[in-house]
Length: 305
Image 1 (tube, rainbow, N blue to C red):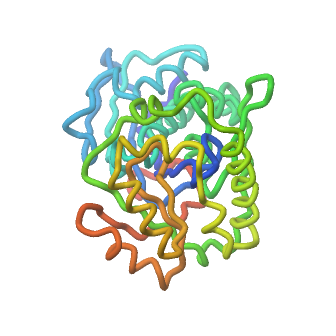
Image 2 (image 1 turned 45 degrees about the vertical axis):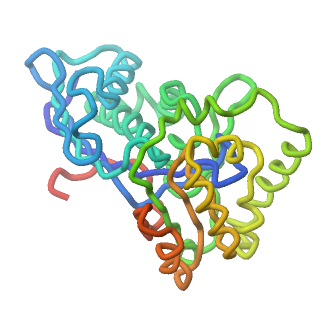
């Protein structure tokens, strides 16, 4: 049985990897997509999109929110006859800020909310597992679902697991994103990664990923060293040389910076005094925004909120 009332979900942007934590670390940011869904007696799926991606995304069952909803409905036992979706998108597409994870999570959360008893049919662990299946890796979807900073991994059984880190007072660390005008497809960026890496580089990243947990939870003064990477960013430079140059420039200035997800956005963790200078270093080719951490993750909201 489906609920008749329209339902709204808000989902945050996310940044993955944070330098050395490839496919494992994710952080939720206070930049949001809002999606409203309602079950309809009219057959088919209709999608209305405003904001980011409005000119590019499909308006039917091929839309990623709709596809995710259909997968969730199937997992819960059946699809409604029709659906109406309205998407207000603020997360840039193809920039490494988790737009696909936001679409997947919003679809799963909405579908569960529209089914009577949905939380019993699709509990949190099953929702995360389905999100990982749809996205392909857990870092962005875990951060989108839970909020805050998360470490995500997969058990030997294949089940995804997440741990939300108890980050040092979040107000002492300011996230800044520098977003270029051009997009880079995640598939293209991943295709540049080699099948194997030197053992020394793997050991280097393992140490930095471990240090990143310490830096985030108790020693923010170690963030510059803890966000260094040799595992994926050097190999992706051909896809976005300006992004790589900006990361190097910020790090040379003592600012912890990394490629956000698969890029090409640059993600930096700094303090309030330094945040305002990053735009000057980034220049006109990047739209620089000082954000906040999102602590709540995906959540249902009142329609008039």
